[in-house]
Image 1 (cartoon, rainbow, N blue to C red):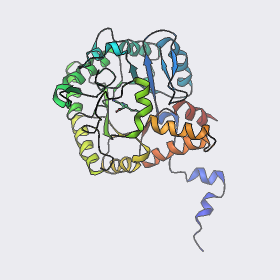
Image 2 (cartoon, rainbow, N blue to C red; image 1 turned 90 degrees about the vertical axis):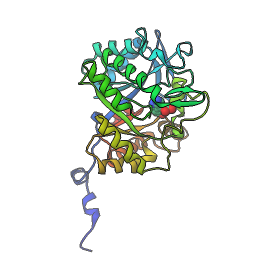
Image 3 (cartoon, rainbow, N blue to C red; image 1 turned 45 degrees about the vertical axis):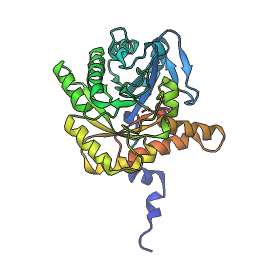
Image 4 (tube, helix red, strand yellow; image 1 turned 30 degrees about the horizontal axis):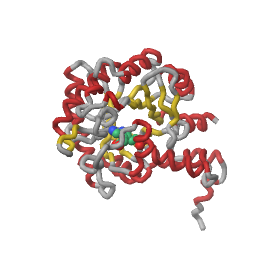
Length: 323
Ligand code: PBG
């Protein structure tokens, strides 16, 4: 044998030298659930260690996450049922607590990168990402609302707009609305290849945002499809996306890899709530080592080609990286 691959694994220094994939806190984006009110820290049962936070309880924790080196945070609003309507009008209302929270966080942590969610579902009495008329999710009626929501978030100080709705043409409409209002520096991270997945359950528990009827299969992608991700990516990039996202991450590593091979635009992947819940459940039963499973998952998502990873593991992972 003149070739023995094990020679390059023989000690930790050599292993480190030939390590192909890096994973650091700079790659992590931490999703957070915001709740209106005071003194709220309400654990999402299906997502241990993650909470619905009111601003006052969030700020001290936020400081700790920043100290761990996490810089980018994706914010989601948990909205009172009373404030939801067919058109999701609370999403851009002056009194929207989420917009006020963005403003306050940006003021308190100017060096943090804040990302938003743009979609109707947290605000919609139908629990869908677009406007529902006669049981149908109407694309073009939804676009101006998404644009309004995005401009309101930009006015509040958001750094990255995150359209997660999968309506056709939304990136272009949002880009134009941002540019027209002077927010040319606000970025768009588009949920490009977002699949109709079984892994969003805990997230919908957190926001109480599950569809009241039907499913999301007329706008989110079919898990059977791969080439379709190329079409979505082409469109989003042409319409002005600064990042393209694949979601979920683990069942879709091939899609991450495909987009990486075909496009130069930075790629992010959403390690979604159900993926996180599975690890917690198995670890709690003693079936998996939590720390090792988390790091292996995140590393695999990076190895597949993701630049950034949205993950509920962010604080735990950043703590492990420090050790
Ligand atoms: C909806 C949205 C969803 C998630 C992020 N934005 C759920 C859905 O499409 O129903 C899921 C994130 C997760 O499961 O962690 N606009």
